[in-house]
Length: 418
Image (tube, rainbow, N blue to C red; front, side, top):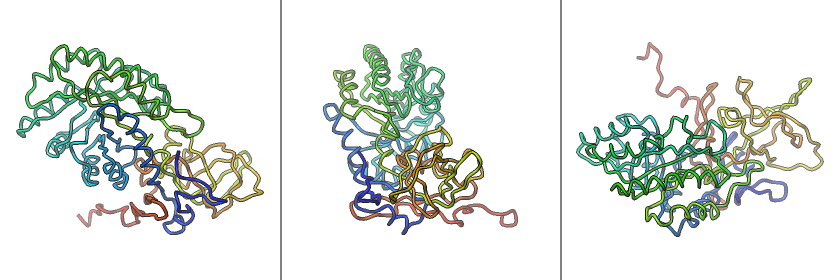
């Protein structure tokens, strides 16, 4: 459930009309619902209440400081994959002991920064990374808590670009080599082997791939414990999907029951890394129609948001529902592409979509845009990135200002200025 609903003919986020925000802040603009974010976090937290657990939000899905602060206040932590993400999390007030650090390409500087910050643990993705963390930790006189990310080779039945647990994936250590790598980790200095990590993909809408992968991982945990490795954290990753169109993902309680059945008797703390499921349907992208046009074979609705603002449709062919911000009775329907101002044929928000006819100046809401929207946006075509707004009750707050033209060249200089 989310808190974007029409009241009469006008679309509201909680108790604030989307049109009011668009008029005050301009378009395009990302709008998030505080109540929806809270509801989604608490639903997942409550679902796992019967086992020790920590919800580490996948910051890659939505990096806004206000969102991170909200989840931290509810007792959550973060899953980060770069030094910059770690910096954002700390700046938002997330306690470092609730932060786990994954990613296949951690640099020396990033590893050292995470060690200084006192994060909970590194999720290690390769044998070379394992040795590098040991080397840096030993040189700095501290101990690095680590888990190995194990690749269980389970098909998550999702888009191939966001499947991460197959044997051909760049992520993790092949499960057949995991025992060997854990034994190697125990011999290296300045490492504390505390956990195991898996993550098989994103936008997964069936429970069985999670159960299959976790069953394999739990089998490995039992082998490790039999060999004297004390696994205290089982990081089950994230990836639970949402409804964009007609998907029917499991509810948090159903999801939790299935996984808790696999891990209940292990006595370990469960770490979850949800991203999309917390923020996806908690945000929209509001955009304004600039023009409508017709070709001999196509209708187009040209809006002021483009693929630089929301990359998912162009990148993955993803579906986002299109809602009118102000409903008008008596309009006929038209099949059209909703396109942006970017100079690319791949610049679209919807293709061949049957919509009520829009007119220039009207507002459109691109739904389910809270995940991988602003975080994947860019300045392509020298377009300033959109602002972000948080709605709480009957108030709204600009939690990221719209970039200016001056922001586009900040840090640059001509040769004469060097």
